[in-house]
Amino acid sequence: MMISKSVLDWLLAGDPSIRWQTLRDLTGANPKTVESERRKAVRSGWAARLLSLQDQGGRWAGGLYTPKWKSTTYTMLLLRDLGVPGDDPKIRQACKQLLEKGFYSDGGINYSFSMNCGETCVTGMVLSILSCFEYRDDRVRLLAEHLLKEQMPDGGWNCQRHRGATHGRNRGRTDDALFVSTQVALRRPAGAGLFSGFRRKTGSTGLGGNRTRPEEAVKERHLAAAEPAFRENIFRAGENRKTEPLEYASCAQGASMV
Image (cartoon, rainbow, N blue to C red; front, side):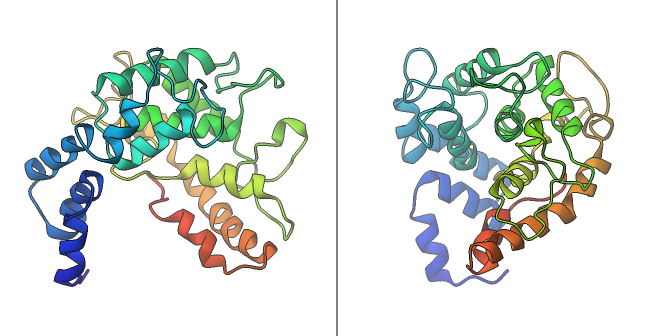
């Protein structure tokens, strides 16, 4: 990829969370240099500011999923994308809160008192957070298994399945649940894939000593089957809103099969 020096200089002059990804993706810097820059995000800039706002209980805005956009779940999604290392104590504390307070009997995540099952979108978000930050707990595997069980016959996901939804692809209707659920289930954050936290150099999952290979744990055939549904939902969402599909396709940046 060709990029002008002026643009590159502009990126490198930005926040640490921008610099480390620029070094990794655009300059070919060695891994030690990239990691050193990445860890600066904890000490200064956007990520450091967000970390400073965490309360003593390990949450943001006093809640796990609400208030939306600034609660613990959404703040952790942003910190994940900014590249905060998973060994940061505040990250570990928040991961524990998300799992301990939300793990439901069916293997999903449920922060709502109005539901009697795991919520697909939220389960996907929390699984992405925990796996990216390499949080070790046997229940992380159960979240992955739950999400795979919730996959619809057409390859997509739908957070309204518990209310009778029977498909995961948007068949020309305005149904954001289809697009969001499938996008969340598959999204690949900066620096890691949805299930990349399972990978280790040894080939283990790193979860409670379980040595099963990642391919068996993830069941990649499920993810491969989801790709058509994901891409269809992107463009259907754009058509239904009478906007350019590329606005929605932008949400797919970094989304791919593991």
